Length: 118
Length: 110
Image (cartoon, rainbow over all chains, first blue to last red; front, side):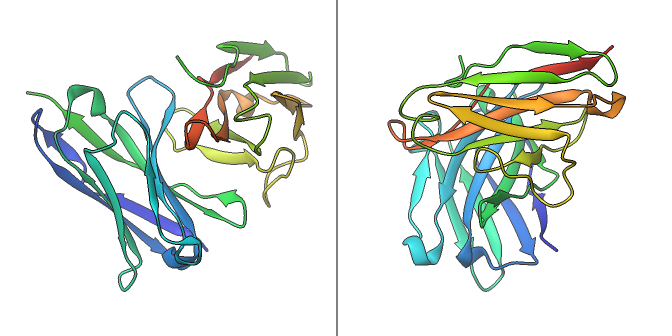
């Protein structure tokens, strides 16, 4: 059974940094395309970025609003995905979900809340 | 402003059939698979439809997806009170090199 547990969210000041983690079980991160998707309070879903599977090159891609500030990486030995967020802005306030796509099917964790406020 | 366009709201009575539309362009829906998600209040999104019209295990066959050109639709038949939720469509966009979402449709069961 695929399970995802996001953690690392919290309150941070504008300009600060935060690293989110997504501990995965039931599958290997290296074999999946892993995305981060966020949802601001009361708003819709917004794709943040992804890291491709190892067989597909393991490259990353990012949405324009976060490019240059956010970095996605993974630790294969820990089967954990990370989202390093730097230069945070108030508009980055959202629940962040990690979501793997395995054989075309998306799985979702419970999300972790990031609040950027002074 | 979302890249994919959905109506902000939809409604129906129990037992009815409702459809939710999702309009895009040649760079997203027109050339890539469409996905649909259901989000119940206070919970994480859940995949309803993948690859245009495929249902994951456990999703009732009351839910169906279709795609034509640069538009897609989600149909819910035999509407039930527990279907009251937000529904989002999504697709990969070749021009943006990223996944794009619709703004979401809030379904109310009257």
